[in-house]
Structure formats: C-alpha cells, structure tokens
Image 1 (cartoon, rainbow over the protein chains, first blue to last red):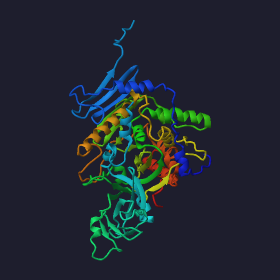
Image 2: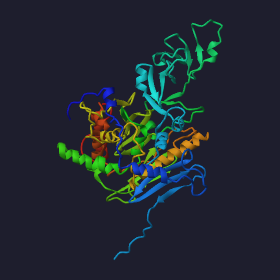
Image 3: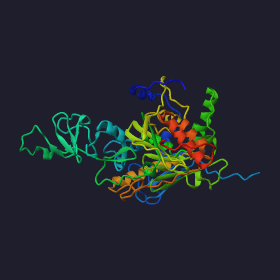
Image 4: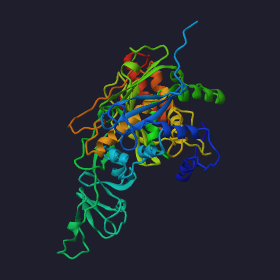
Length: 94
Length: 425
C-alpha cells in the first residue's frame, strides 16, 4: 500500500459530485413522467390512497414490464401491480 | 423509482419530518465510553440536531441540547458536575432530565429557574459505546444485541461519510452487489494492480430472499454450488431495523452501524466481536479498540482495494442524497423495495401515535440473539485472516493481535499445527 495522508473535512465533503443543473432532455425523463402518471393511486382492495401519506408505490422493472410494489396504509394490503402495454402470452417451444 | 416527494420523505431525518419522527423512536451510539473518560463532555450531532453528551463524576451519562436556553452558548463546553452539567458562560446548571436547577447570578429568591427546561434525552452505556435516545417519553428498552454484550475481543473501525444513511442501508438488502463489487471488481483491480483478490466473494447468486421479522429483514442467498440447506439461505443474516446490519462468520461477529448525523452525513462503524471457537478466555479490554478507517486517499480518490472501501465508494459516489426519481431498479433489487415499504409502514404507525413494531422493544431483557449464518462462504481460519486484512480492521492498530487470536483458536481446534499462546502472557 502507498502512504496515505488523512483527508481534511473539506476534502471529504468535496468528494460529493455536484449535480449541475441541466436543461437538455435526459433519457430517463420519460420514465420519471410515466412513473408519476401511471403509479397506482388507490388500493385495489379498499380504495384507500397509496400515494402521499397513504402508503407506498415503488416502481421496478422486469424486462419490459413496469411493476409497482404497493402497500396500503388503510387496510394493509400489499402486492405488485404490473403496468402492461401489450398482452403477450408465452410462445410454445417448437 | 420513487416520486421526488417520497424520496425526500424517506431520507429526511430532522425533527418534525415523518422519517425523523420514526427514527427518534430508537437508541443510537453517539460516542465511545473511552472518549468521555478522557474528557467528560463532547458535542454530538444526531438526526440533524446538536447535543452535548456527558458523563458525571458519579458515572451517569446524560445528553442535552447543545445550546444553553439562557443565551445559547454551547453546553459542549460546559462544566460537568454531579447529577448534571453547568453552562460555562453564566453557570446555569441542568440536571439529567434537562431541568434548570441553578441560576447563580439571579436573585436568591428568584423562581426564574423553574420555568426553564432544556431538552434532554437519555443516555446509557453498552458495549463500550454511549447510546442516546432523543425521542418522546417513555423511552423504549435499549436493545442488548448479542454482539454488544457477548464476551470476546472488540474492534471498531469508524468514519463519517458524506452521504445519506438510507443509501447505506439499502446496500444491506442488496446481496447481488457482493459478487460484482467485492468479486468481479476486486478481481479487475487485482489484475490491474498486481494483487490477488479474495475468491470467496466471486460466487454467482442463484437465488435471494428477504423475510421481515421482529428485528428487521433477514437476507438470504443461495450461491452457485450451494443449496437451501446451506447457512447462507437457511439462516441468512439480518438487516437490523432501522440502521444496523449483522454479519458474521469464522469466529467474527459484526454489527455494521449507520447513524444518521443529518440528511447528508452518516457515522458508520464496523463493530466486530472476535470470539473464535477454541478460545474460552479472551484478553481483558477496558474499552473496545477503536480507530478511524480510511476511505479516501491523498488524491481525493476512493480507496477501493478492500471490501469496506468498495462499499463506501458505492455509497458515497451515489451523491449526498441519491435521486431515486431517476433510478431504474429491477427484480434483483426487491430487497430494497421491501426495505422502503418497511420504513413507510413504520412511519405510518408512528404518525398515528403508535410504537414501531420492528427493531423496537419495551420488554426488559439481558440479551437479544440475532440470526446469523456461521458457515459463511465456507468460512475457516483463512476467511478470518482475510476478513482482518481485507476489511476495515486492516486499519486497526491491533490487527496483529486479532490475527494471533484466530491463529491460536485454529491451533486449539486442531485445524492447524502449533502451540497456542495463552491470552495475557
């Protein structure tokens, strides 16, 4: 190992990469907009809110599918809701 | 992906925020007992608030708001006395509950002091650290987790990291990172720099699982060549809600601690208890060994040629507070999804005036045993030595003593030949 100098507090903070404001579109802007547009707002069981203070909706991806893992504060229901664009079944082996 | 608002809610720990209110239901280590024996008062910052933590001549620990209610001078420079602390500026004295009990410059018959009360939390010692509770009364029990109370040799590497604590906790429910960050990346680095990276972390994950339990989430994995009968799946190891992770193997048990100092700084510690099989009597320790582990080199680059340094790079390089409204997580990240849900559930309970149900107890107890696999990655003496040399304990001034302890244990077990040394001789 090479000799190491102890970093100062300023250097420790400086390692944070500053987020520069950007004006040009970023590739994930659409995903962010679709997240806000498509996330489930109400519990499928009781109709309670699952956004805001009501619960949680976390989006994750599985291949092309966008999956919202949801939990309802009102009734405790939890589960995955999948946003699909096309109904595709499996293709038999041939 | 989360909404921007939800990301803020999950990461902000200041007073009055939903997460801040949840986090104030738990005890936190804020200093080492050694430090207050060296000087009896110290400034600490916890959950975005500043405090003075102190030890009285009678051995009681206290924690009080840093600013004196009189004219806001710092009580971290106060005079520690029996049953409390006195402001150095004008002599106002506060007892352990924060009540003002003396105002020497006021008229003798004045009742002014009776209307003054500083905010004071509770403080207690466990495992060589001073723990603080700054939430509403009554305080829950301080959970006496096995690593903090069991016999063994204690070694603690710590450092303050400039990032939000939640991104560190999310790493604890992300098993796949092990084979890449500590496996493939370590090998890549070894090839570039001419050293041999440990092979134990290179195995492919076949299956991962996450089970909520009373103390958090048990993380399980099946690695290539393993089955569900192996410890890594059958027992696993837990994220201990809300800010610990428990790991272990090869006679080393460790709590990884991530205390939110504020939204963008986290006190991290790798608290290791060395107690290898074959040794029953351990060298006496007045205090745990504690030292600052390094994660940045003189050029301002992350130190990535050891396990914890690699983790720190991944945590801190995400930014002070990672933008989860721009993330793209997949099926392999469901542990993170489960953790976010657990936080949201517990936040909701606290917002409704209830106690959390995870990581929290009001029952008096002596010891809490946490589930943790023993046979980790085929652990043995080599694994223990690799852990010491290749983890944060490589910065321990006592690492040679730790290695000797494990070698002696291996001799006592008959695993290697030699003559074991008796501790203390």
